[in-house]
Length: 546
Image (cartoon, helix red, strand yellow):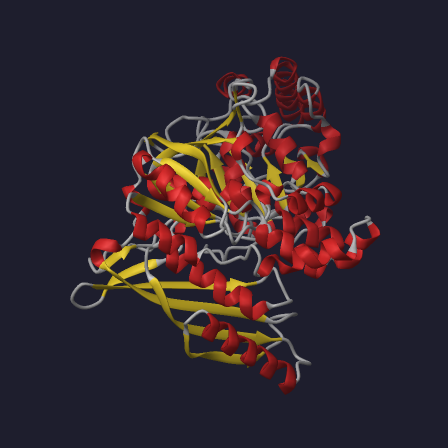
């Protein structure tokens, strides 16, 4: 049975060999004691015994064997961690077992962190519902939990578990417990060797947080595209914000597309500059702009014209030709969205490719972290800032961060290219410096070391983040440029950028090939964890405001 990818709201577990470690029940001994043929299921065999006395005796043997197994059973490897994780994700939990309820409860007493109360429903053979492989128990459990069966995962270590889930219309997960996988027809949707792998399946079938697609999924999905065009010089990848394509002669075309979703004020400026920034990091000159404009119902022609005029003015100011796009009023959006696409050109030998980064290079950062985030907060949350004691002059100054120090990195990118010695550039956007450094490492194929003490944070940014309980390292940061350059060119490049009245500082260095970020606190001489943010801090702020 094929399934459309649906969200998972509930997980139903088999018990023996799934939540408990396999091997507690001696099925061969039970079969021998009650005379059950090897290939027949035990419960169905007992029910088929014609003599009432023999049947009662068989039930007694089974129940004693189950209780003996329950007394000595132990949680399966990772079972309690998985249950804790699922509960933390808001997933409803159930158990369906061919065991007696008494044996299940006794076995759960051997768990150290979880118990029967963790499960909304526990169905056993005492519930007078057809046992697995019948789908009845799965359907009843889903109904009791108030979850559509199609949004339920059935997890078990035996063919009956898979068959019951499939017949009910649930998604199925077969647990091998690191044993050879039997032939299952039709196969389950997922096969796992260890229970801990269930976390990844549930995460894959759960709602994504607002913001960028997580890098591990982005890497996976891009790999599945199977791109193999030799004219594609810079292909999609984690940390690669542009595509570079051979055009004609020595000219390379560089493409960038980006939506503006985190700002409603000055949206045209954000749309143009953010896309220009990425093109500039490749060493290219931004030349053309296409813009797709999506407006919610209720938007007037006057409001649409205002955006058109803003796009015209911003494009002219930055030397871009606004050459096309699309405009639509749609209930698919609740506020105005601009998707900007900038195309630039660069000579082949001047193309900056992140994979040219090498061990020993210095890593520079321009301006300070979260310039864009500071500006957006001042423009979108001025009332809250005033209530927290931020003065009108301070808010006004932060609003002007759009142009001073500015969210464009085009000027310093051009200076970096002209200076020579630059091996990679990456602008800081959604997810802040923390995400940008990790992306640079992934795209450049080298580990990075960052000195936390050196990272510049503007005083206005520091104050707003302190008042709003935000971390500036995870706050959207267009306006800051990461530059990897040869160590011999570092001081010269810093002086050149500062002469243009743009702050620049060396914050780290490129290490050996690999992926990852090592954070160093120089004052303490200690290595500390590099921060990681599931969503941008401004997204978290929006969530608190709703």
